Image (cartoon, rainbow, N blue to C red; front, side):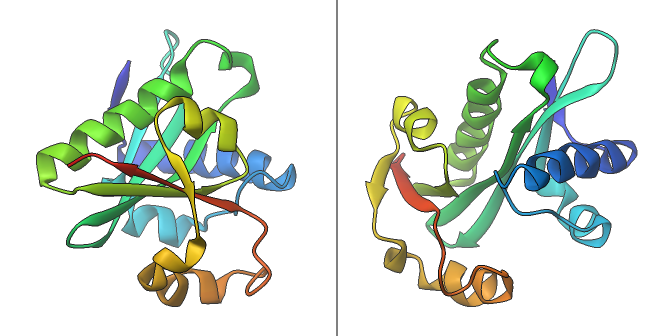
Length: 151
């Protein structure tokens, strides 16, 4: 089941994101950041009630939002959960009137299958100055930028 994240999910989300961060697949998120951006998050809850996946839709500008913090537990991978989480965020973006979504990622092929296209990171100056400047990899980002036009 995919649903909006709840306060009770934050510790599980952070744990899952920490595992991915340890693999170098994404950046870790602090509890403070997860609590303040909780409304951005959707989760996949497995049949036992455990959070087995998460994804965030973070609004950047009037026409632009970011797909971020996409993670699926190893035990739940290869069942289409990641794609369903992103599709849920795409649907929410459309409902909000957002016309473009982007992701900074190492999973280029995954996002490509969902219709995202490779673009230059410099298309997103708002992201760079709001978030990227705080990243330990800045300014030597090795992630790829992908864009999806949903207008």
